[in-house]
Image (cartoon, rainbow, N blue to C red; front, side, top):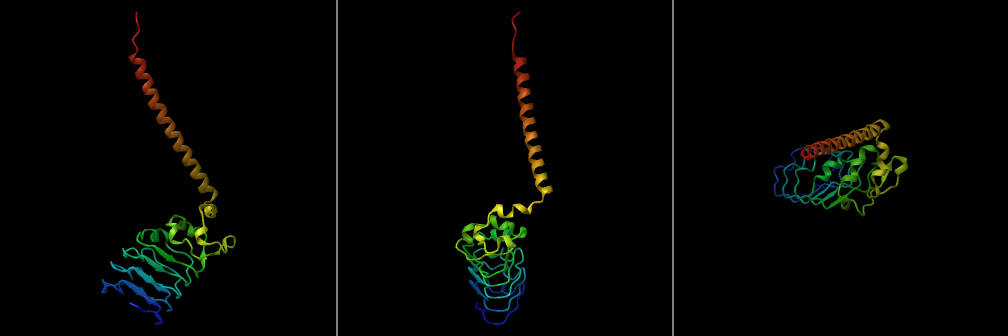
Length: 193
């Protein structure tokens, strides 16, 4: 279905639910600001969704979860600053994700991007606009070091303490197991009188 150039502002939940054989959804060059969470629910044959050249500023978590054959998702040229990356990574059929032309805010809220299949954004010209230190950085070049500041000293300290406590527990369990073995071996030694 091609809904491009129709001045649409919203795709409501269930808009396409009566079209289970639908394979393509083209809704580019509209004035879309929002796609409701269930808009693409239960579309088993959709392979491509093109929402490029709109005014989308947010994609709800789970928006594409029930599109099992989705291979191409075009979100380019919108007003997006972030995406629910964990949800995007669950769309395992996805092969192409177009993201260029948005206002990506590569702050701590976007840290989950490093966990998606990097081949989805490889070759993309999508760049960070914020924060200033990452302005102009390609999304595909982001790494965990770019988000290291996202953990406060307190969280970092807590992570270190937790790791130390785990090591101590492992050490104690090994020591206890070894000391049981040592006592067992001493008890089995026979002395000649």
